Image (cartoon, rainbow, N blue to C red; front, side, top):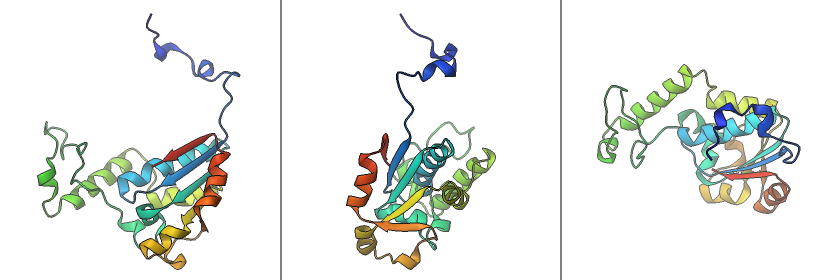
Length: 180
């Protein structure tokens, strides 16, 4: 028998039998515009619901909280098989080879920023400000800072510094852990 989940009221989805998670731990390792939105949206949503949230930025994920790199986050059209057509009326996806042409990264970035704006979604700097206001703890990986040649002064205000053991302590007590 197939259940139609569309008719189940939201109040029945979460029962007393399954208590609501209250702690979220995120590891963010990608530093492109399209990879910055998911962890920041998840983190700010969880925090707005009263969850305790920590984000651990590592490797290229440090670009999201880097003062100079964050405003320049972009979307790569190369190697992105889900890259949609530039115009909705064009019925084909951009082939990887075309994505390598000059200007395609800029076009893909502009297209994504346009989508986010039309959807009234906050920008990355706005989401980071919201994260700070909601008390989300943001950590830069100490080891990765050295590997990536990033100094503490390169990062936006509000980012703390921690090693893997400190984050694992937080994540070990979390209800939800995500690697993005």
